[in-house]
Length: 135
Image (cartoon, rainbow, N blue to C red; front, side, top):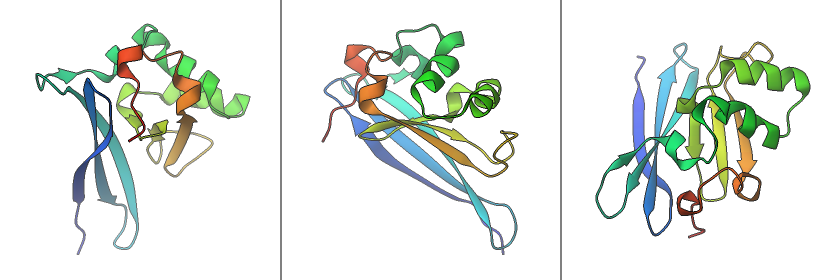
């Protein structure tokens, strides 16, 4: 029996925003799964949804390349990741920003590949009001 599992939980927060992570477990075969992570950001006061690209100081079309400059990846991987990057692949944790490349999206990594970029490294790209606190 193959089934899909979904969970939603708070992933990060600050005084203004709350970040939720949705994890979706998808079957590849009867005994193997892949996980897809997605982040949604909301204003804590109004409940309004904020598009993730609005949290960054750079234009949306530069977001992938600017984030990948901060990650520890080879030149070949960086080019592959820039081509595959989608803002929907971003999710936050308390201490990092992650890019979740799904299985099949990268030439050099056929399986799911999650690139984690430390919070300190992303500070220059995030608006001050968008930086998650350590809680």
